[in-house]
Image (cartoon, rainbow, N blue to C red; front, side, top):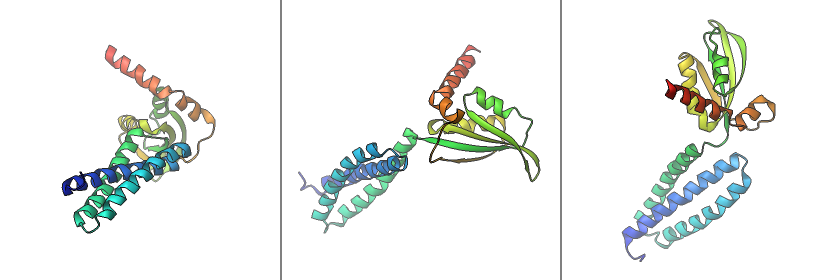
Length: 192
């Protein structure tokens, strides 16, 4: 079966895509503090790695196998990142600076279920409304769209917090308040 060079190239490519996908996911779960899941994934990662590397090392004189291994590595990184984007693990904190402090920005975001802390600030061109918003990563794009709808000129910075303890944000976000607000908004739009 492994005498067909095209089959070997295909297997090496596929095995390395799977290996690097596992590697990428393991690293992400490790960074997110999910050590047991990361350890579980690493068992499959290492078996896949040894199998793929063994295929290449047994046929090291054939450059196409090494190229397939390298190509599989690159594609595995892309696949792993795409899977991580779909999983959208963890939370993000979004800092928003609105150029118009009179907009009822904070209220509108809270009605949609977001936890918002706001304060007035003074920028180079005058008064500003500064807000800090915590949301699960799976709602990140929706939050950006909501912010741009309310204030298209808003300045937005986001980052992933390493640790979150206590407070209103964590309780309301974990209870699914954002999902409830989204469902209610969709129902209202359908009724119109």
